[in-house]
Image (tube, rainbow, N blue to C red; front, side):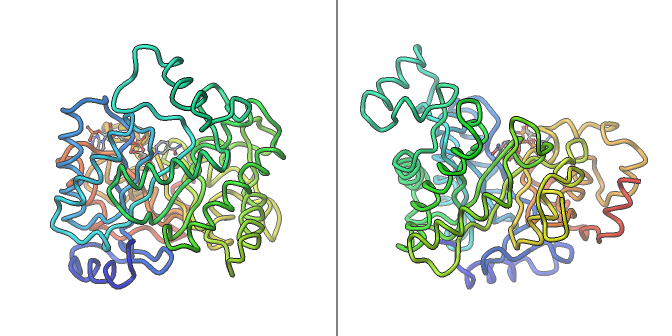
Length: 364
Ligand SMILES: NC(=O)c1ccc[n+]([C@@H]2O[C@H](COP(=O)([O-])OP(=O)(O)OC[C@H]3O[C@@H](n4cnc5c(N)ncnc54)[C@H](OP(=O)(O)O)[C@@H]3O)[C@@H](O)[C@H]2O)c1
């Protein structure tokens, strides 16, 4: 497990190299505010090799936040992250490793008959009950989530996980009501709270695509306040003093800023955005798709009037500095299988993040 001592030593190793507040606090750890994601790319040996080099480059040069999910590239991303942590000249305890479960994963490649594979691997074995499935590929039932948690630990070659996300829970809204999805989340959270109690996990959260950035009447909407309330109940149920629900992952970028602009969550002073709600509730936001899956790295995609307000030498750096300057955001995740991209993205952290006034001004 990442530890405060090892992550503090890691931060010290890079002192003077990054701007102020490059390293931030998450659950007592010092974590970089530019993190490496591992979602995109073909499920091939060649892309594995690229990611292996990219992850080693990242963790050896100041990025100690790695984000993956069991279904990414059919489990290859988790396995490569594990190999790279092992290969890199860095302590595992200095690296924050987060992964997710919820989508039924293939194993290494897309099978010739995906439906038959899912049926034989998950339904026929009793691991997944067909009634718990959404869209034929998604399940957040507690037994399944706990099974996936352990498979992820094995894939990553780590004893403990630093953060575990229930992946895109809004997928379940296709087949059941929000109330039932909150019940499902609470049941899954109880298992995760129990794994925190046994020391297998530091913290957990939910990773979403639509749930927290859409308006309250959208069919993909989930209430962050209700999710937090369910986590508190889960902690109570297993006898934990405080809930370990500490992280939210959501897409946020110059071209997808609704998590800041859409006041869809019940804050103490009335409706507020997901980012402000998170900040008020003491949750850490990890932004996904921070450079719009590569689009914001292209010159001209960020409008000039915005770009000129953003710190950075390149479009990708300006996009990352937008994301990591937003309220409530602990870390901007950026997927990169290229060592050159890792270097460019990490160098965004040599610039100070914007203060609140400068960040707000980008919306003028
Ligand atoms: N619902 C969810 O839970 C969810 C959804 C999406 C993403 N995520 C997480 O968030 C992470 C980030 O999101 P993302 O990977 O979808 O999108 P992203 O970070 O916005 O973009 C990644 C893409 O940008 C390219 N890129 C990276 N740095 C670049 C640079 N400096 N110049 C030009 N191109 C660059 C990468 O190419 P190369 O690979 O060639 O370097 C990759 O194709 C994911 O990896 C994943 O861990 C979570």
